[in-house]
Length: 408
Image (tube, rainbow, N blue to C red; front, side, top):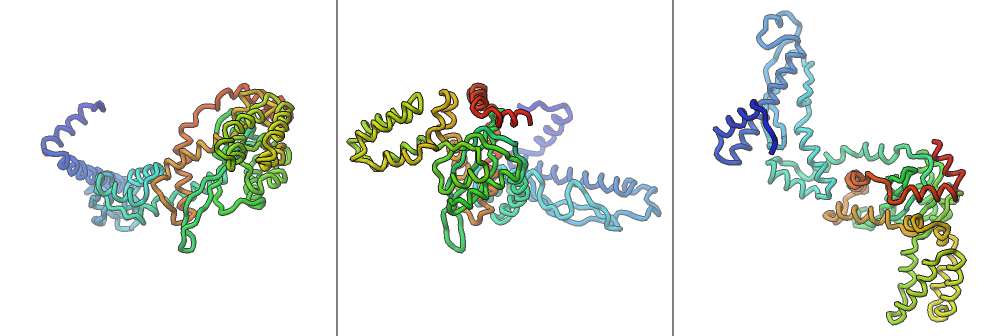
């Protein structure tokens, strides 16, 4: 229970003496809110004029009070009509309630908080009406959340660290209206691990199709924001990714997600062959060294190549991008052999946005994702597990590049 001082207790008792129900308390608090705002405005006008109301100091001062105007302002207590004091010269600019302000910042903050938790504009409209007695249309809620778009743009363009040891790339699909139709659009997330082992979403990009030019645009934007090097890029064999990253970050090592490769490999395997085939495939990706893995891959081809030739071909063609993790100990392998870090972020993102079946515009999707990123990021307060061991190993294999980052 909140502890009240004696003055607050006296005020609470005074309110209770005039109220018999919770509704009465809410109504009385609404009156107090309006009255308090009016007192604040009067005090501001006194300060602006340089003298108190009815003071003789106001004679021949060059400015004076000029009555009141009515104004309705929405707050957490509902709609309240207040008297707005005016000065004759029209120079009074109140801070408590600005001239064109119609609701308190608290309501706007509540709307943004509800929106960031995944509530739709219609749900927020109903919630404000039922709980606070505030009439806020869906279009008004949308306009209030639109106010964060400059903040979104600033976040997307913020400076980044010069070197990231590990960066994950992946996409998540949402339905967005375009030209009167609902289409699937992909939100591409770039999750970076910095030199301290902390996770950070470096940016989000919305597109309809993967391609080398699309990825080149993303990589160039990262470079323009200060990224000079990425040691290891983890991804799911994204279309056009390899050529694009090598053109912008030529030293970056690519690591394909092993989990996705296994899923793709077993997609067309008959059920009766699935268990023994998976056991033989595990000998490849679970090998202690790259040499052992290549022997296991040849054995796999001898046993399964005639029946499932596409599996061996897939692994052989992508081997250069699959084999990076064999260099490292278990601690490093755990964080680079899969894109689970960014997929976990997408699972949390889906929880925040699950109530929204589709988005009217790219901007509405963008602001919803941004607010969700801010909420999710609050939990990223610790470096990833075993980071001391991981960065130590990465600095051995990428000594000069990692040293440059440590010196910055």
